[in-house]
Length: 233
Ligand code: CA
Image (cartoon, rainbow, N blue to C red; front, side, top):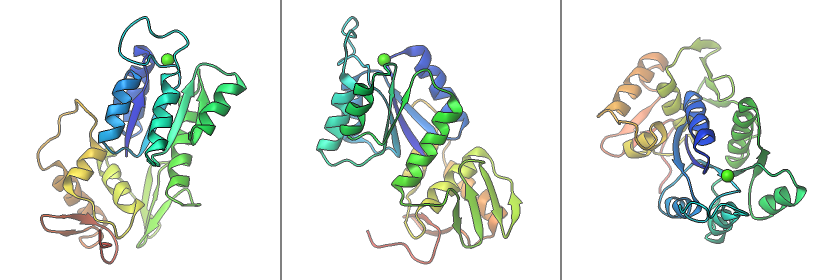
């Protein structure tokens, strides 16, 4: 899962990025509205965490009464981009929450918040966005629970590394959908993290050893999938 964090406060941004990476997310971080706009216009994310009180550009001193976050959100929705957005705001006036939700946010959190609550809201928003009612993903006898990060097969727990879990989660979210190596790498690594060459093949190999050779299938040179047959794209 790849998240975009939009947060101008260095300390908050740094600690959020670190904590979310520990949760297994690939996290990219931008610090102003202009960078958020251009990143969101050119790259795909599973979810955006958007601070409302953002400077409109990287310029210092422009931060007072900044509403850059709402502008970012409106621009995303104006081009019919349905990427889930959770708004983070230091302001707790009902007006800010209403403005955020009405501008197209899926949820909001008022700072300061507990990391556990943020993580749970991210999972809930992702679940709703994928149209699932069930918290856990299940396919072909394998169950994956994004909240507890536990995987089982036929009721027997299967121990996975964080990256193996991330690969499996990406594939199990949409059985039958073909994911290329580059798409899987996107979900595994944020900016600035070094991508080991053939990392995806290594994780797939490990997953096949643990779940059986047939659970994850591939079309050579195209990508990987779970399920019967990739949907035509
Ligand atoms: Ca801010």
